Length: 293
Image (cartoon, rainbow, N blue to C red; front, side, top):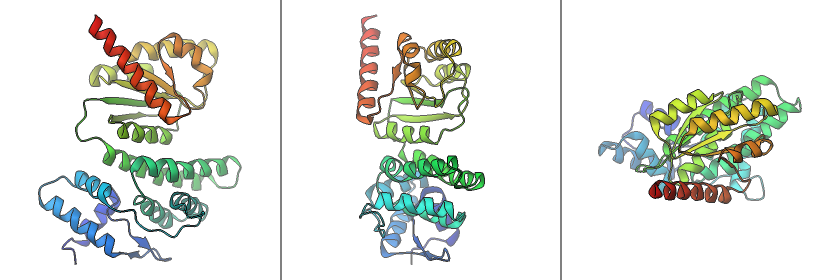
């Protein structure tokens, strides 16, 4: 029907989320007329010389939301989040992949993260802490959702942007899936997001800043280090960021506020819109100082 080989079709679905067909209980794909239309559009872009990743981004951005059976008061995102958690509880890898792929058709990448994938990750983490799921179940969910978030981040990158944000976790932080979600939000604000990942020491930040010259460095910390170590670590991160605006978020950021603000950094607000205002204000102040000098 579409003139696309099954191997290419599977690759597009796995790498780019195009299409994201429904599944039977046995995990067989069920392609709708909308899926067929998306595949044909993707095919035409690629045949015209466009890179597959860029073609997928354009197809997803222009596609109408894919209808789903809702289980949470008509909220498609909440329903998708619930089904992802349920698949993790069943320890069902195929079902988990299928539900995550279905969620990719619900809207813009940042909205998918904030209303479906992020809440699912948080719920799965809570269940693990409560002893209601195993480490294996939690790791499976993290692996599938983490790969999906990185895929979304690739698709969400602005095609043409002079602004760049560097994202990393504090030196002892291992969990960075939320940081990828922050990267999606920065992409929506017009920044190209570069994620360095977990356990990033100040020296690595310094090297990245030197090489990439980011406008912003965004760090995350869940458990703040003790005060003597905290001051030294914040000083080292502040020095590493050089002239870039820098902001710290995460559960442990508030405890570090005095050290961060003393060195000219920002503590991320709990309100996303306020975070954007914080960033833009910091960038404007830096531009004014640079122009004055």
